[in-house]
Length: 325
Ligand SMILES: [Zn+2]
Ligand SMILES: [Zn+2]
Image 1 (cartoon, rainbow, N blue to C red):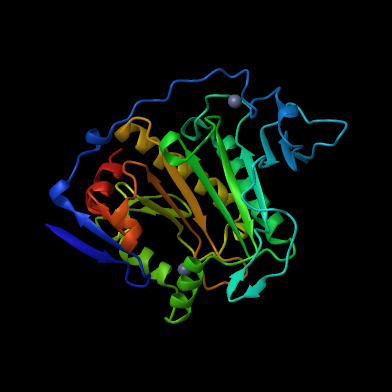
Image 2: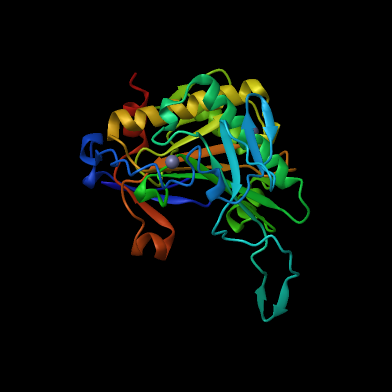
């Protein structure tokens, strides 16, 4: 049996293919071998091997590298990407039949720990809370810059997720445009009464796709899950963007993210994973959400041809495995 599913307000489809249904143990992957830390540019002690840091979190202070002095003894370090996807110079769009816009923007790496070999699942309450604060600060910082419309904040963990360095880090890319996928979603949200995400939370927390809730957030396996064990984390009360979360909410969010990653490890070994944040700065009708999934298969011809994803684990089964404490 297979089912084509669609989120009731999003133009996103998936195919739930239970004929190929798998149990978590069919996906188990091994932990990556640790490479030598001496040549890792993200490790404490190697600060000079990266561009100077734009923000360094150290014992409650937010500092910056200068040409003369690199901050040592840090907890989280934000640095420009050495190989940026976009450039910091703004160029006006050139129209010539094809619309060309130069790759203006900012590309930053957030090094989440000075220590090689750490995983987010092993972070203490204070460490994960600090990381969420860094996320909020950096999103705010880039959204305050001229000509920036959207800041993509994401984490690629593990070889299969596109992480080129194993030292724990996230990335953000600030863009002069709102990505089409969010534009379409924004239009869909503006076209209905009330917030569809609030409605989804009300409905899904009573469904078999509910995974867990804590003080401020819920985790659900989305109805039209594109990937096995996909999880969406949403604030219970309407907030449009991570920059509008209180310190207490950030603590809850970090706790929920750590829970999901720990469950992935329990069920799947040490899978590669991606997570990314969705929010529209300045549009109160949007509802902040964070989406996370282990990388257990690679989108191939069919997915690229149709933008419809074949998923071999039903979200109902995924939730059952994920919520089991
Ligand atoms: Zn390292
Ligand atoms: Zn809402």
